[in-house]
Image (cartoon, rainbow, N blue to C red):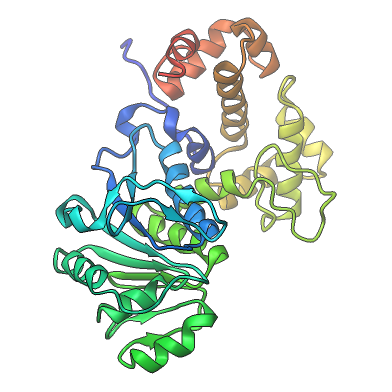
Length: 346
């Protein structure tokens, strides 16, 4: 018999929540994608922060950074946003080497000056020659188009700037979509679409699982048309069959004293086999594995976010003993609960 440690892997839904805490071998080892944001005077703060929020949150889902970013102005001076807040930047676009970036976004806004800027155009053309992916937020694509960098590409722009772009840049294919990705060009029309655009970019880089993980974090308080609806502790896909949603909700509500399969089946008026088929079809897991991962995820949060004893966490998450809890935690995270607590914050 071998004593070799058996490493468990999370099913996709819980892997998103726990990605940053898994062993290095399960996360991305590729170099971080380097992004520059060129801030123009009166740029849309909301569009900019939405784009940055997406990549910063992506980094939170990985034990190694997926992205790095820096802010730039043409000459390195501070830039005033559309909110009247002055923003210090990391450097000057005029001295930024294009070889040190992979993507470059021009951040515009409603009151940005759209008159041709030769110095800006020269730097953007240099970035294009170095093969950077170029993007525009709000009316940033207008400034890219002025440099001839949107010729033959489809792009979008804020409605206030559409007429001017159509008149002055006839070789550009202007779209009415809120965001557009066309080969090496990316654009969005405003603040709300900036997040959607960046999520689509991240999806191309790292896949839909990372995107869904970001959405779970950033959409936790999305309330739609029912402001009184409480936030769920975990995101349950409303597109799932109602009986399956009911089972997931029962699991979530019974973590300290987990319900047995027969109890769950009786409470939702299904057979055990029917529940297993639902999990296999819609979650690609078994009920017992899902339930364990739900509990071990809660245990990880309590372990790293509170000072509760390991014994108390063991009970709160439905494990029969601290030894059982420790074995399960090590199986998933590659370290014991006490080691994880010692390493938190590092």
